[in-house]
Structures are given as structure tokens and as C-alpha cells.
Image (cartoon, rainbow, N blue to C red; front, top):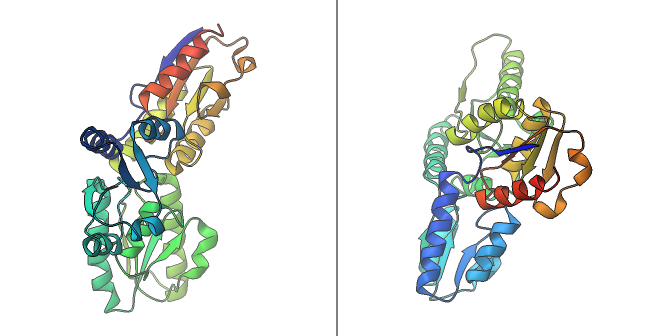
Length: 291
């Protein structure tokens, strides 16, 4: 049985940078605080925690003083930086440049559209760290939609600017865009609508979607490796499943089922932008023993 790992899978630049900064910080101290999970993968989290990384929530963060805290790739709202300054907390800022650019864009368009009583719409997962950071840029004055059922929150008679969480699917974003446009036209009764669309899905994520579609077609069975809390992982897994019905989701090698591989000649192993390559290698190695 042939077992091959998708060389394009694994950490995106933002996650690589955050983990690199964490490891460098831990070389200088016995422990380092991180505001939220540095990556949505329990296996990688455990590895870093063994090195001394301490994950904290925002409540704990508010009570810290005179220490160092890592901001992960997802980014943070302005309130976090204000608290850090007040509590003499040194921030190691690993915010992804793509996310920071999106935050700036949300602020810019909010200032412009606010004067016209318009609305900022963010296609994303409510409560997700990146989305919280985006909404925080405009003091909560944004509408979060995760699917078409959420569109009833929108006033289609007003101007709209649409953004996306950087790790969402292109198909989902296009569906939301199309439905908003249609409802605005119905409301106006013509095609003269005030609708600005900003496709802010990360290029690394959008390219990964197309590349994965091609990858999974080459194999009898696909094993997708990801943390269960990863939004990107869920989205990419669904893409794999849509192209190859014999796709299985695992978080580590212990979740593999030997029965999956009976009478199979080829296996492709791939993962999310939050999946470490060493974890996919472990999974692939165990699969090899099944042949």
C-alpha cells in the first residue's frame, strides 16, 4: 500500500511565526504566557506546554502584571493592547500580517460607511478569536454571519461592506455575497445598490483549497489530520470529503482504524493550516504498518 503525505499541508506562515516566537521566548525563560491557544491542535499544544508555554484566557490576562504574554496569529482587539499598557505587560506580538491588514481595512471602511449609516458584515464564526479581534476594531459595530440563515440580521436598504474571516471557504463566501446582492436588489427594486465586497480570505488558505481538491483525487483513501477545534480544519476536511468520499478525520495516530485500509492500494495524508507536519508523519508511519 502506497502512503503519501501532501507536501503542501501543514502550518501556514502565521502559525509558523507564532510558534517560532514562542520557542524563542521559552529559550529565555522557564515559562511564557500565551493569550488563547497558540494553534488549534492539541498535539502541538501539548508539545509547547511541555516546554513551558502557559495558555491563559482574557480574564486571567486582565489580572497579570509585569510579565510577558504572546499574542497568537489570530490577532487581538485594541482593548488587549490597552490592558497590556496599563498592567506593564510586554507583548510578544505574533499577529499574522494578513489578519493585521484585514483589521486595518475593517477600521477604514467602518469610518467611511458609518457616515452613510451603512453596515459592516463579517462572514465568519461567531466567537472565533480572529472574528473577535475584527469586531473589536469597530467597538462591536459589525454583523457576524456564518451562513445564509444569519442574513436576516441585515438591513438590505442600507449600504453594506462585506468582509470574510481569513480562513473561511471561498464557496461559502461566494454564497453569502450572492445572497446579499440578490436581497439588496430586491429591496431596491433595481440594480443600483451600494455593496462593497472585500474578499479577505487568506491566499494561502484559498490556494490550499484548490490544491487539496487535486491531491485527494489521486488516492483510494484520504486521512485528514487536524485538531477538532480548528475552523480551517473543518472547512478543508469538508472539501476533501466532497471530492473523495473515502476521507477520514483524525486528530492523531491513535484514532486510526485498521479496517479503513482493507483492500486499499493508496492512501493520501493531509491536514489543516494548523496541523504540524510531524503529526502527519506520525499518522503516515502508523498507516504503513497496516499494509
